[in-house]
Image (cartoon, rainbow, N blue to C red; front, side):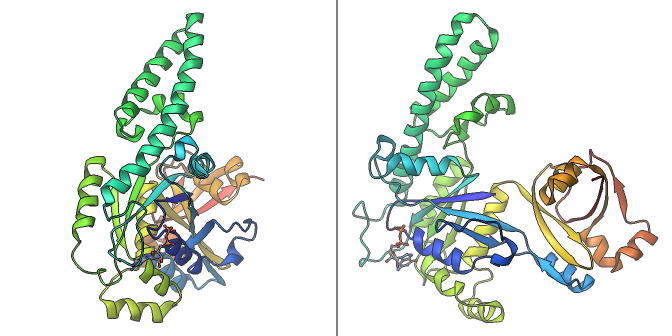
Length: 363
Ligand code: GDP
């Protein structure tokens, strides 16, 4: 699951991204990942994993992770090839969701590319580049479909209707996500990898002295804007995050406590990213390891098993499932089995957030 970080130059993207890589997930858990300077993998903090680890006392405890990609260099005119324009747009095509960083901190020492501080104008600048890029993609697609219309096949007529609807929305300066397309409609344009169909989260970067305070007027403006789009907003101070990222465990907690903050901006970002992507966490728990895994909401038991290993999905027989709460309450699998709390679920079972699963499969 990947989340791309976009935003105008000088808004604090690299500072935030560096905090992400600094806080980075234990590399030992991801031995097969290629080392890409623009990709940062972070552990998803989850108190349930800590409790499970305490109760079961395994040799190892492994959190699940989320990937952030730094997509720097998106500037005005990118869709027309300005800067390294198109190259950056193609990076965005590959991510599952977008975190759009907007500058909401006042600092006269740091120049703003547009002169003054105006987060809504900044949002619209980036948004317009993405809309223009999508418009070009859709117009090319419509040209092809237009030719196919001559075949008289019904499916091309239906396709054209969807394309026209999308083109109209983009021409109005609105993102494709605002159309709330049906699954079937999305299927028609899935291979176009549209940019503005991806879920978006605004990250308001505020001054380090503003964290834990009331929203400043710029953040307020971003919230009003996002509300209309049904998008989420979180506030962080990238500069502060860079400091927090260098601390660990108790030290970090103490630092946050002193500042009167409950949760670091990074944890906020991870949680919001998770929600934005519609993800859930399930667990596997044995003497060897207790581990958290990520799956899409609505995943069936075999699909969830496939997150662990494709063989587990292919050879899926059934799952033994218990909710996290039930397991913690009785304290062990043996007891859970005795009390009939361990359920046997088949291939149609929809895995729930917090399920602890044991998959049985044929090899
Ligand atoms: P990018 O171009 O979007 O990647 O922006 P950078 O991360 O390089 O940040 C641009 C400048 O803004 C740097 O000098 C940062 O130190 C500064 N900066 C970033 N976040 C904050 C912040 O929260 N407060 C203040 N005062 N400065 C910040």
